Image (tube, rainbow, N blue to C red; front, side, top):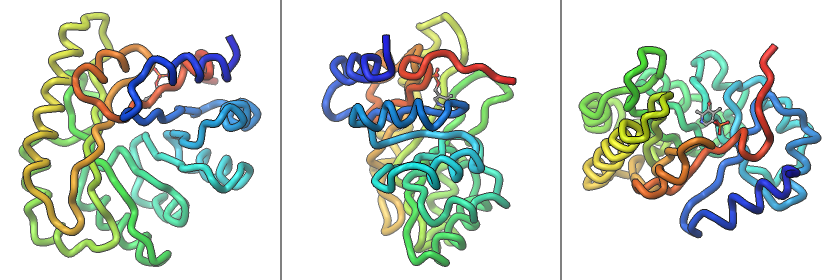
Length: 222
Ligand SMILES: *Cc1c(COP(=O)(O)O)cnc(C)c1O
């Protein structure tokens, strides 16, 4: 099936309140343009450099989401245009995003990445750390960022029961943290679910899914 067919198929199977982020990392601009021509306007990349290059070459009505781990010294390259940063996992990183957003006189929406998987390799903070961060005075002073939701990645396993319990845990954290809000903190987005598990994620309460290989085909890493 073509990229267009894949996109249309996925869109026809997800509820309207769920936002589809087309994860285009490693894929050439020609593939992204095929998705763009089929109506897709939200793309997710996991490397800042690659996202900047694609942003330069592509139409300007695209919303670019940074879904990967963010290195602080590279925030400046995307601060002008990035529309959502999914993988925020420290106050230190938030401060840098705030500083760079201020230079461009904008507010950058961010998601806190919560660690729900068992793997050591996955990034993210605990629910408790998220609570502490959001309650801190230092956080309340950041006027150029907004915490718009949470993001999580389940363990890479065939055990769907485990994946389900991790998604449910993230949803309960979301519901819990949502009870409070501030001028720079209002949870609306719950980003969970990828090609292999987005249906389950939606059943568990996700309203933003990040889908790559089911749209663009398998990735080849050199
Ligand atoms: C690569 C990636 C995805 C998409 O993965 P697929 O299995 O190809 O859909 C989603 N989220 C993050 C954070 C990723 O790095």
